[in-house]
Image (cartoon, rainbow, N blue to C red; front, side, top):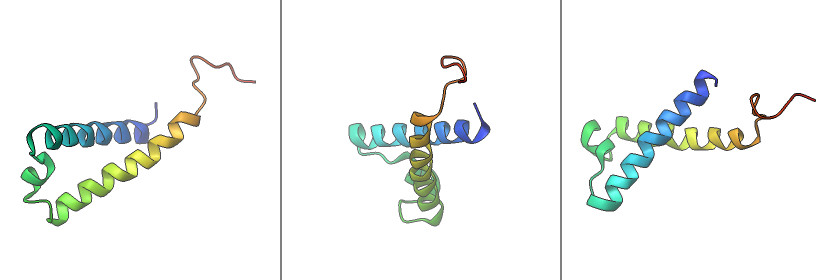
Length: 71
C-alpha cells in the first residue's frame, strides 16, 4: 500500500469518527481541536478529508497484487 493511500485512509478514519461524534453527540471534534468550525485549520482538515475521499475512489479500481495475478 502506497503512503498516499495510507494517508487517505487515516484522514477518512478521522472524518468518519468526527461525523460519528457529530451524529451521536452533536460534538465536532475537529472544530473543538482547531478552534471552531470556521477556523482556517478546521476548514483545511475538512478539505483534506474530502480530498482523501475522492482519492479513495480510485482504490476501487486498483488491481490487488495479492489477489489478482498480472495478465
